[in-house]
Length: 289
Ligand SMILES: *[C@@H]1O[C@H](CO)[C@@H](O)[C@H](O)[C@H]1NC(C)=O
Ligand SMILES: *[C@@H]1O[C@H](CO)[C@@H](O)[C@H](O)[C@H]1NC(C)=O
Image (cartoon, rainbow, N blue to C red; front, side, top):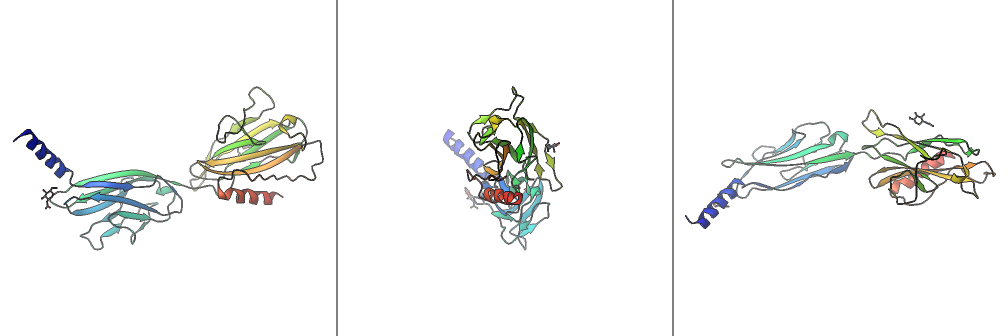
């Protein structure tokens, strides 16, 4: 046997050993709660015969396809996993109405018939998110302050999964040193007793498993924070989940001028990244007036 023949023989052996190949696994990494998902698993049997395709979530089987069985497709109930049997087959499984407990590691396992008895697996993680149903809420804001009064506010996110991140803006400038908007940033007032100061409270998990959090903002009602002409300070709180954002805008005044013509609610139609945020902000605002 020449070296080349030996190499070819080895390659043939290797080829036989990997006679079954998983060619594609598609499990989306992020899905929204209440949506459906189609998980895909494609394989190449070469010249073998399919024995079964099995799907697992976190090591528990929830769907099995065996061509020799009648019916071929069978499901096994698991929390958060509702299989659409009609739409599922040896290449895909459809899950309906995803919930928070649908998050997990999904594995596809393909096995071939005798005489090969080969098994190939692939797995991927899917996270199910729940968006907040409302914009964040600002509490503690008065319509008017006297110069030097303490302004003590809280912004609380609506429950979501994962937890939303909160940001405060004063007159369009973000408070603190994160940079999500590339606007001017107001450093927290470490060297000024007027603030602004931020207080991050601990997040809370509700009975549904959703999380919310409060971010406090404290400052003194000093003229430097108010618009000279209108004696107005615009306050915004934004909650963010990745590229999705929701915000609420309010404004307040410092005592000096009759503010009868000004409303307690100020809406800016700017950078509405989420189509819903305007509706939410508008709804919130209308409730206030
Ligand atoms: C299976 O494939 C190998 C090479 O890929 C070939 O030599 C063999 O004859 C095939 N067997 C059958 C039953 O088709
Ligand atoms: C802000 O929220 C925190 C945590 O819930 C609470 O302890 C605090 O009293 C609140 N402050 C104001 C001004 O509402």
